[in-house]
Image (cartoon, rainbow, N blue to C red; front, side, top):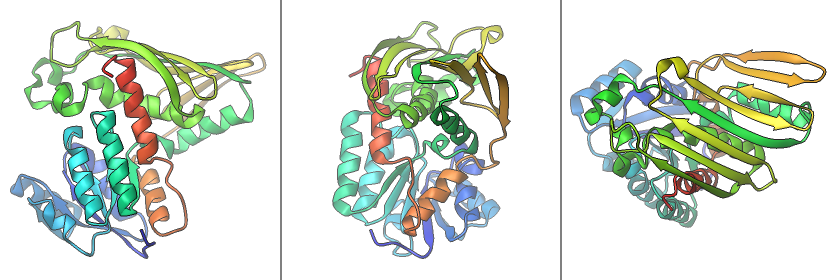
Length: 329
């Protein structure tokens, strides 16, 4: 794909994530604008573009694929549609920025990568923690050797059911045929992808996922172990039916000279560093539009002045790891 002077977005799907997290970042970054938003509900689509001062709305995704002004498509729909829309965007010669998880199967991820490669268009995935300032700070702490050589990473996520879990019919995330696997796929994907950015690909993983609470069809408890390419070992336990008093969300990284603990979700991000010489707490507030730093890297890459750290290749690795951990592949 040739570099462009201005990045012009077409947006497919305009749900809650688009309101604050993603779409505003697209039109607030320099040399970037949103031209058209597609939403199946015409009234809601028209309301969205009016509030965000975007020129056009449509109920037909083909209007975006066929628009010669649009050079990148953001796919903000549930994962079961990601492959279909990616193939259409690639066939139209447009770059793709797809929400996470990338797709519901390793086969779909491979098909998306292949289509974009053959069309000579880049494929980006919305694992935006790869570009957030707090997570970049954490990466530099590890690279500095402050906690020594990294030995092990442990993910703990225990969460009580939310109101939408008690009446899940309108919550597509807990139906595996749509989301790929429930809250684990929605949330753990961010954690595993960030660890991939630190330690490289997960080359082996084992585990299991199943449903204990019976609130919805998807797994609500997942446990697993995994090994990164650089020799760091890891493990995780995710439970989405605990009591609120037991809620916990941390990642611990153990090194030869100390350890650090941090939260993946919520703001501020807190990094607790412990060594024999120091106990330290660093806090970083996330930006208002949390995807904007990653969107900036996408705009820079399309303009030929930078590189985005979250691609189809890295996104597919995360999908593959989740399938192995839940013993679905």
